[in-house]
Length: 443
Image (cartoon, rainbow, N blue to C red; front, top):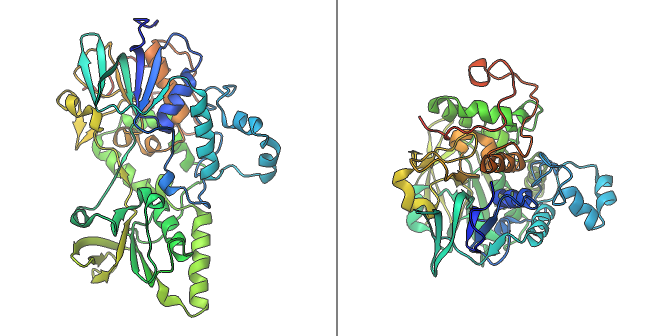
């Protein structure tokens, strides 16, 4: 499919948001002349969660699950090429580690972003409309471009407990941008809500005095224990193309149950973080400072009152307790609600409880013309499973979208599975068609 116009504002594909997902798409499109593409982001340059870039934080996925390698291992935008270009290939191998530091991986993605001419920073897309020639992307200063297809990758939004919303401010906030805050907790009581990786990292930084020495830190989690990420071999098969296709074909109630059951496969705590945190807490007890930290698993946050009084219910015995806090840090995860730029099209989109219905080709189900496809990345967890909110399948997802835009299998998106998922979902083999043209999620 050739671009329909040579004008600078008409594209085959336009991307909204330049996070890892759309960056992967742009990297794989680099050199495919049939697709005239542009990607827009309101930020002045590429950044990946700078507010959570703790020095000791590590990736929870292999470096081979980079932006391109899974479908195009000779692509110049691979992590291995990044290492070679920076003279660190042999030192990296000497470390014998599959997972890299989060800072290094962020630097890799920034390096890729600087090499791609299709990225347009400082351009905020406020609305996507459907016009006579295709999708129109609009910003504050007018129309930015027209595109045959659009891929929205604006990221997930912080999930905030309803009872805390009236108190959001300098002393009660979501952890998403904690390193970008002017924060001091010296002599204060701090409560951290949320028992995932971010909660563990924030607690560790608090106990190590990053923002001053707190008088007391309490860590409350709804989970019944502070549990590790499940990185076992067969659990890793949940992050494969075959399982994504299976998951999409299941009834909504089954999907919801599986997401809860598989939580630790994508939202557990890295074992290294747990070990480091346990060592710090043990040292506090061993040196007579046990009162500085309180670990509270199995607690549900049920309310919050002025003066930062938090009401908790213990899931083990049903008892209620109250915590006082000077500072509340919400490590309560992210949600994939409808992106702001699509609100004008909401009546034409298939939504389930506010979530987009995303098909196995990552196209959003809507009532618009079939020759104008609306794709969404990192927004279909409820439709496609836990892998959709992870980096694990970024390259495969991008390749699938590119195949759809081209109308042919430019990339091989097939992969052999060691697990035979249910016959009703996958058929007699584990290999599904490379490129489906049916409307995503359409009943």
